[in-house]
Amino acid sequence: MLGRRLDRYVTSFFVWHFLLCLVAVVGLYVVVDTFTELDEFAKDRGVWEQARWIGLYHLYHIPLLLGQFLPIITLLAGIISFGRLASYNELNAMKAAGISLYRTVAPVFGCTLIIGALASANQEFLIPRLEGRIRAVEIQAKAGNVSRNLWVYEEDTRTTIEAERLDTKAEGVQVRRVEIVADPEVTPDGQLLPSSAVRAAHAVWVRNWLFLFDGHVVDAQKSKHPFLCRIVRCAIDVADFDRDAARRGRLSDGTPAHLLRGASALPALQFVRPTAKGKEPKAVRDPLGKQPLSIQFAEVELIARYRLIINGHLTASYAGEDTQPPLAFAVALWHDNQWLGQAQTYTEQAKGTPESRRQLIVYDGDPLPIHASPVQLAEKKVDPAMKSFAYLLNKARENPRNQRLRQWLFVQLHSRLAFPLANFVLLLMAIPLLFQQEGGKSTWIGVGLALLVSLCYYFFTYFCQFVGQDPHGVFAGIPALAAWLPIVVFGVGGGILFSNVNT
Image (cartoon, rainbow, N blue to C red; front, side, top):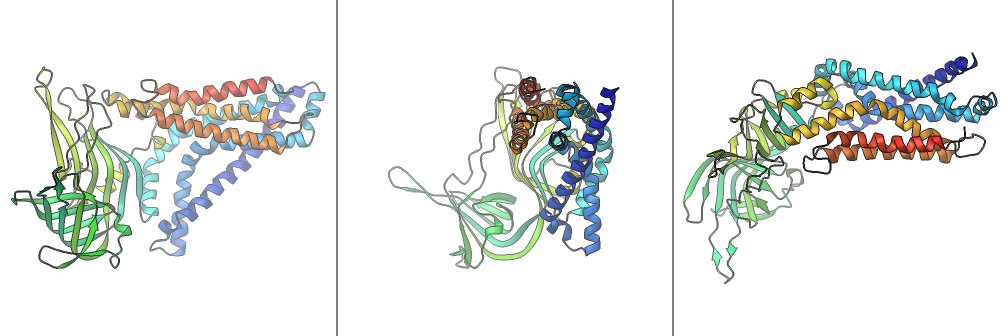
């Protein structure tokens, strides 16, 4: 009878503090996030409209926040609950009644397992149902939207787009009359070799990239080769360009122009995924040479907003021997309802024979085979935190030859299975550290140690997941270890500490 009453008392005490910590942590996050992103919420909106979008944005993000913060909320609730029980000598009274600490904390550990189960249900059922609405609110609430670590799967073309960054409102300028000249190369005997040059009627300068339109390349033999679009990487970001402080140069006709030093016409792109034979395409040599380039332009026009993708891959789902090889691109600009980019891929000739060889295909300002618009990409972005376990498992099975994608997906899948145990493991480590004083009294040192251990757990977990995504790294071929190693390490450590606690 006493045990059941004790269970009800300890459980209600813990649940009450859990709810208080939940409201406090979520509220603190909302306040900090609101002030951090206030400029994005406030653009071209009145006060009441700002408040409305801030409220909607965070309301729909609360389920996502729970998936991230529940372990630390559970830990805080456990520390506060048992700290208060110890400070009021209630734990000593329980011991005097013949109830050990193990028996006292048993209902709390049961609550942590229930909380983990509810978190899994939230992740598997609620969040996937709200995904469309969450996406819509994200796009509408923030005036400027940047998507990082983009992963989009296009159902119609069965291709996957991965990118480091999608900026739907990147600041850029338009420039006129552009000339790019490579510094002449010097031979060992001191002779100057003739160099190539590029001239264009106009260009769009976004971030570090200069998109040249309607121009021509003048090679070392002075022959002209026209082009519709060409891409050059500048040495500085357009946001750092000071028109008044720019060094003055001269165009070929003597017109004064802004002069920028340092650029590359086509950086060498490398695939991060192995191909079917474990080889990678060779790097592409810069058509203008590896020497520094000088960029000159006569006019700087209006500042505008552009849609830009930085550092990505485009891969097709495996569909037999005719599957398209992956396309690696450094940058892509949304222009005239198409993506113009700098990229490379390859084809294999005489496949499967001893004479098999690869032919490199280079895109430099050409339209890329990306069919979705920037808005569609932002809406279709695949965030594993918003997808169910079954969805991620199906995507892993659809790409058996894409080792990098499969490794990343399986790390996410095993992390889903391990996540419910994080609440239990953190509390298992925290309770022994909490009581550092004889007589069952908690101390501030114990509280500090418990919080420090929780931070170490989070750091170790994210580190393992980050390293585990590399298909050639430490966890290559064993993604489960990247997800379960923190649980095992801290679980064993917590068990050892808990077995030595004074009960």
